[in-house]
Length: 153
Length: 162
Image (cartoon, rainbow over all chains, first blue to last red; front, side, top):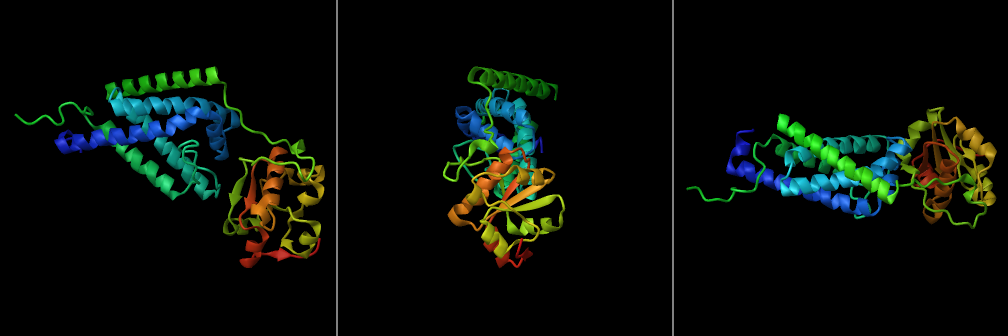
C-alpha cells in the first residue's frame, strides 16, 4: 500500500484526499466559528459529555478544525493534521452511531448552521469515508503537490 | 513515524491554543437552560427546547415495560380519560400552563420521560411540556413522534380512565 502511494496515481489520490478532507473541515469550521453557541448546543444535544465540556468544545473545536483544514489543503504539517482529523472523524462516527442507536433524533451539527440536517447513517458513512481518506494521507510518504505533474525526463 | 507524531502534537497544540484564545476573546458559549417557571401562562411563547430529543413509536413501545421510563400525556384531562398510553401520567399543559411540582416530583426518579400529545400544531403541547420538564432538571426527556394517534394506529398498549 505504501509503495503504491509513492506512484504518480497514489500521490495524486493523496493530494486529492488532502483537498477533500481539508476542504470539508474548512467548510465545517467557518459557520461554527461564526456561531459557537449553536455548535455548543448541537454538541450538548448528543447527551454524550457534560455541559461544561460541550461549552468548551463549542469554542475550541471550530478553530482546531479550521487549522486542520488549512494544514491539509496547503500541505503544511499535513500528515499531523491528517492524524488529528482521522481521530476526530472516528470519534464523530462513534458519537453519531451511538445517537442513532439510542434514537436521539438531533441535528447533526456537523456543519454548524450552514447545513442543518438530522443525523443519519449517511452522516456516519461520510465520516467513515473521510477518515479513510485521512488515513491515506497519514500513510503517504509524500503528500506534496510539487513535482507531481513534472514530465518524466 | 516520529515526524508524524511531532506534526500531530504541533497541530493539536496550535489548534487548541487558537481554540482557547477564541473562547477567551468571544466568551465561552452558553447553553440555553429553560427554566420551568419561564412559562407562566398558556399564551407565553416557548422557544424551541433544543435539548429535547424525539423518539419514534416503535422505539418507545418496548419501554412501556421498563419501570424507569415514564410516559406523560400533555393533552387535556378529558382526552387523557378517553384513552392514554398504559400507565401514563396526565399533565394537561394547555389547561394549567405550567407543570405542577407534583408532576415534576413524580417524574424525578424516571430515567427517561416520554411526553406525547395528539400531534396538533406539530406536537406543540408535548414539545412544550418536554421543554418545561427538561428545564425543571429532568435529564432525558423525549417527545413521541406521531403522538397518541400513531401509538393507537400501531395497536400499542393503551387504556381509558384515570
